[in-house]
Image 1 (tube, rainbow, N blue to C red):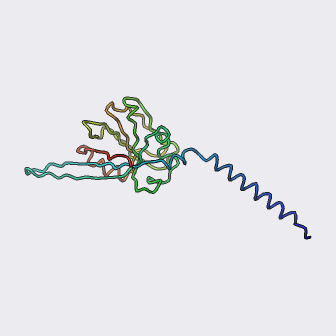
Image 2: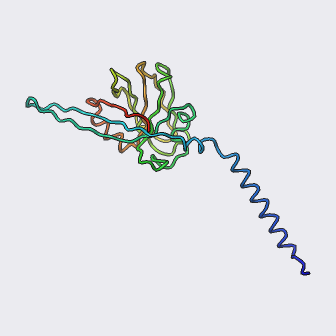
Image 3: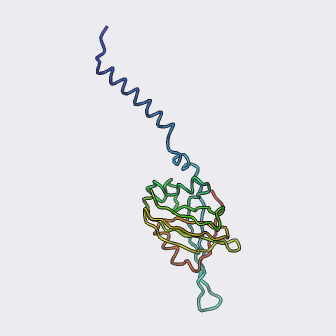
Length: 182
C-alpha cells in the first residue's frame, strides 16, 4: 500500500474547509439580494398635450418607460443602494417607482449613501386619478434631499438622469398614468 503525502492531505482538508465556509456564507447572504428577486415592474406613461395656434389641432405625445416598483419598506430602503445599473435585473427598466403613499404628508429624506449612480428624483401627486410632477431634483452619490410629501397619494420616481431630463423638459404639461404592477 502506498502512503499519501502530507501535503496532499493538507490540501484536501483545506478544500473541505473552504467548501464548508462557502456553504455557510450562502446561508447568511445579505437580505437585499433575496429581495431583488421579488421586484415587480410597472409602466409609467407621460402624456403631454401641446396646443397649437390652429383649432382643433393639438400635439399629443406619449412617453412610456418601465420602472421597478419599491412597494415594501425593505425595497424603499434598498432602492439603488449598492447597484451598478439602473436596470439592475435586466428587465428593461429606467428607474424605480417608490410607493410612498402610506407616508403622505410626512417629511422624508432621500439618501444617496451607498448609491453609486446619479439620479433624477421626481415627486408626483395624484389629482383626480392622474399624477402631476410637483417637485424634482438631480442627486449625486452621497447627497441627501429632505422633502415633505404631498397629501394626495404621493409617489416618487428615481430615474436614470438622461431619462429624467427628457421627462422634465415637458414636465409642466405632463399627465402621468401608471399601469398595474407586473
